[in-house]
Amino acid sequence: MTMTKFRAAPRNGYMRRLQRIAGYSAKMRHGAIRFRTELPNLSSLENVEYGWEKIIYRKVTEVIPTDALKPLGKLIKMIAYVNVNLMHDIVTGRSVTGIIHLLNQTPVEWFTKRQPIKEMTSYGAKFMAARTATRQILEMRTTMRYLGVQVNGPTFLFGYNKTVVESCNILKAKLHKRHVILSFY
Image 1 (cartoon, rainbow, N blue to C red):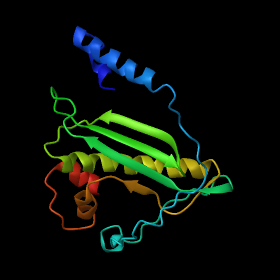
Image 2 (image 1 turned 30 degrees about the vertical axis):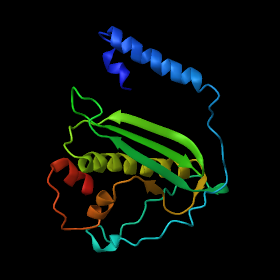
Image 3 (image 1 turned 180 degrees about the vertical axis):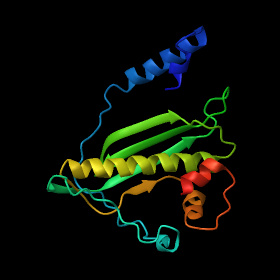
């Protein structure tokens, strides 16, 4: 993703970077994606109640398609990990969002993209990344249901910015940028 923006006018330095990437890939050629179908053990996580019912969207429930296939087979637990590389591109100042989605313990989808807006803080960049991950989670849950897969409980979204999670729970939180406010709603 990072190197594709230089394909119109590549230089020697970019070729050396590509050689390093290819060298790393060659060194890791025995790596594999493992298919693990057992449910993950998330019992060590504490169950924090954030009081979502006290915000604007009080009685919101997940829209479950009525025309989907009858669920068969084992239950699945969906987990997503999200991270941001703040100011990944020094020239443009844009951050990069990275997201990986797991069904049970198997990675099934991954996503990386430069963010469309320059962020001055990791908070804003992580808020945008969390919004992207949430949108993808909702799409994936609907897709799984249409495929006849039983989705077990809520999807866990792991990141490492507690401030983003906590500010999403405060209805009167002071959010300073329009795109962060839109992400909140």
